[in-house]
Image 1 (cartoon, rainbow over the protein chains, first blue to last red):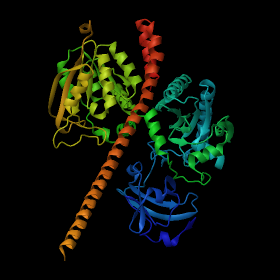
Image 2: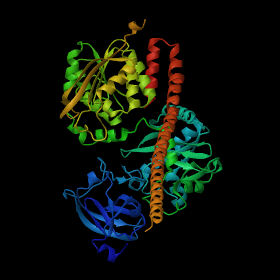
Image 3: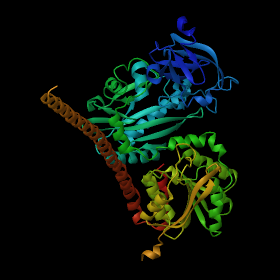
Image 4: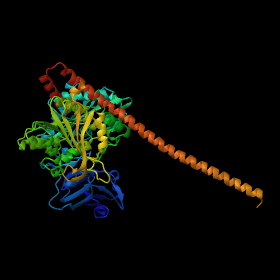
Length: 527
Length: 92
């Protein structure tokens, strides 16, 4: 390793502190940051930083910050580690102990290309790497033979196979694509639904990320889960689209018929012209390793893909982080005041469905009082927390997913609840929803409450000089008049409305909270 | 200065003043036009995005009809419940 004395000894030019890195503006290319020899992050100063005095400053990624407490030998080098720009023992944050960027099982983590912490392939032992490759092969066979789509290896694994003959050290997941013959987005989405069902029937655990991409979860023997993304690729008019967010011009002949590529002794289907695909994905400089590479996806293409395929899980990632992080610990566990208020109004044997149950405090409150209680939430970590707490307390509680931005789950849950006699309960839910999601909630309530039960709502209400509720950016205040109008337009009747001081989700005082009881027309009244 | 000359200077000043006013008015309309055009383009982009979102809604409704309502049509209550639960489990 060659140190660059005139730079590393110049503290003003290259330094590391709690805020981030300050690098000489002469440093242009991609850089790799290691802590005590462990790779954690890549950056390109000219793209990721800003000039600040005589240096270029790049702040630490948000995902990394919670780990930056203690001491570590911080090294900032080029990707080949031939040139060192900084190499010193540094004290960050609390300064206590050694800095460790690891998961709860102690496995090393690094910042991936979308800013999340993930386990890189370089931190994976050969046996587990083999499991990933076998799993990748199985997914491709299921797609090509079971689902009958032209699936192929793509993105990082393709790049590694073609350029290096190996998995890329800094990569952390597997990306597969399939070329769809559909040019209508509606048909493409319908095909993706069919593919998802067939993959589940083949034994995969799958998550739907958008109308055109599915994430398969491959459990590994080291305790973690490898994500295998299955992305749709398709043409609309002259433009080729490939999920994540790529769009542009590439002839179909560069993709089909698929070729075969070898990676660590495994053979996988690949695009017909892998190099043309790599140039399409990464630009003409794809042969030069750049761990800090970020996609510069065409803006118009991203807008189209967002409009056609996305919109039902916009905040799911942030809520999942919330339910997996420290903030959820501050949410009280006992039932809320609103839950007690509702409980007093119900008959002893009335059943309740808690929509947007979060940590489950109120669903568990109702179950503990002998009610048939059910919890619905769109966040997988939240549902996991509720199940654990119910199990620990030996309480009977069904927990189900409900994604209010996804009409299929809304209709399926509505149809399910229509067969039951349950009140609906939604505390601090509607402030988290956009207009389309609220309309789906009223639709669900209309389906579920035909038998005369009620929807109980509590939400932070708009008012003069009142601060936005917490968590920041995930909840907002609503005008009770607007909510009443929406409910009336959906056929509901607001039987009770009160606005006054109440509590937020942490049970801290909120000066303006609205409570409503809403009914929908009983079936008999329709006859 | 002769009266004719005074009149001539006065005319020239009036003409300059009229031209300045017209120029300002033209500038104001151009700025307003640009803002209006921008607002119209933004509104059009939002409308196009709304239409794009219908694709997912169409696919969702088609899926519910084809995969749930049709199979459920001639089942008994117990079979209908099982079908509904299976459909729901395969969604997320």
